Amino acid sequence: MKQNAKNIMMLMLFTGLALMARAAVDVDIVATNGTVTASVSTSNNICTLTVKPDNDYYITRYDIVVSKLADASHAATRASGNGPGISNTLTLEGEDPSDLGQERTYTFQLQGDEYSYKVEATFRKKKIETNDVQTNATDGSGSATPQASLELSVSQDNNVQQKEVTVVDETTGEETTKTVNVVEVKLDNLSIPETTTGGGTPQEVAVTIPATITSSDGTTEYAIKEIGAGVLSNISSSVTITEISLPATDDPLKIANDAFKMDDLPPGDSNHKVLTIKSPLELLDDYTLNGCLKENVESGKLKATVTPPNHYWTFSCGVDVIVPDGITVYTCRMESNSQVEIIPIDDSALLVNGVRVIKANNGVLIACTDNSDNNAYDIVAATTNEATGNRPATGDAKSYGAQNMLEPVIERKNYNSDEYFVLKDNEFHSIMNNSSKVPACKAVLKKSNL
Image: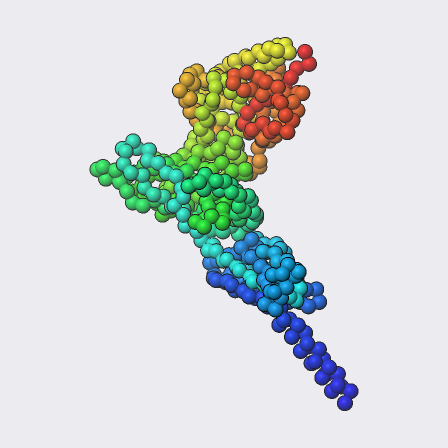
C-alpha cells in the first residue's frame, strides 16, 4: 500500500513539472470572429494551434501570422548584438481543408526558451458582396448604367494559394511587389437596382462577370470558379439582362444547369427567354460540350466575339461553329519551301442543315471581307454539337481533305520550330522558340518535305 501511494505521488509531481514547462512558453493570441487555442509540446518543441471560425467566417493558413518576440530578460543581450536574432514570422505547417469554415490544426516550431510568440488570426466572411462588376446599357438611350453587385461565397472545394502581384503607387509611380492570398469562390447572386429608361421602358443591360475580385484591403484575391443555380433570380422586373460575358480563365467555370434561367416558362413557350452567353473563344468548346449551357447552345445564344488584327487569321475549335457573314474559309498547303497555296473551301463542304459551319477539330485560314475598321465577328456554337460532359478532343479531324496542312490548336501548346509555321501579320513565319506556346483556337501550318 505504501509503495502504491509513493508511485501516485511521483506521477503527480512529474505531471506538475510538465504543466510548468508548458506554461513557460508564452503564446499571445489575437483573433476576431473565431477562436484560436495553443498547445505546447515539450517533447518536440512544437506549438499546435487549434483554429475554429465563427459561423459564416473562414480562415486559411495564410491568414495566420506567427511572430517570434523578444523576452524582456534577454532584451539587453540582443540589443548588444550578442544574442540570437529575431525573425519577423515563423513558418506555419498544415494544409487547409476543402471546407475552410471547419475547425483544423496548424503547427509551428518553437525557437527556444528565450522567446515568446504572438499569433494573429484574421477570420474573413464566407459571404462576400462586391460592386466590382462591369455593366453597360445596350438600348442606346444614353441613360446612366445601373450599378450591379455580386454576392460570392467561399467555395467548399477550395484550393488556396498565394501569388506575387505588382502594385504601382498612384502618386509616385513606384512599383512594389507583395504577396496576396488567392481564395476560390462561387457566384451566388447577381443584383441590379431598379431602373427604367424614359417612358418606363425596362433598362437593357449587358453584364461582364470578372475572373477575380480583390478585397478592399488588397490582401486577398477572390477567384470565381463556380456559378450557382438561380444567379438571376433577384433581378428586378425593371431591368432586362440581354447578355452575360464569362471571364477569361485558365479552366472553364463550373456552372449550374439553371444558373442563367430567365423565367419559369417551358422551352417551347413563345414568351420563354433565353439569355445570350458570351464565352472567351478559348473556352467556347468547353462550355458547349459540358451541357451546363445546353439551352443557350440549342437557341444559338452561346458565342465568342473575335476582333481579328489582320485580313487573314487562322482558326480552329473543338466544336462546330457557324461561319460569320463576310468571312471566307480556306485550307492551306505548301507549294514550295517558301510558298503557301490557299484554297477556298466550297460552300458545299461547309453547309450543314443549310448553314455554313466550320467543323470541329480542323485548322483553317480565314479571310475577312473587310477588316479596315477592326470589325468584330461573332463565333456562334452550332446546334450540331452534342453535350457529352467531356473535354474537347484535340486531334486533327481532316474534314477538308488530307492535303490541308493546317493543324488545329484546340488547347494551348508548344510546337517544334523545325516542323511548323505560325501566321503573323498576314504571313507564315517559322516558330522561333520551342518554349513558346501557340494560343488555343489558332492553327499551325505543318512544314512539307519539299
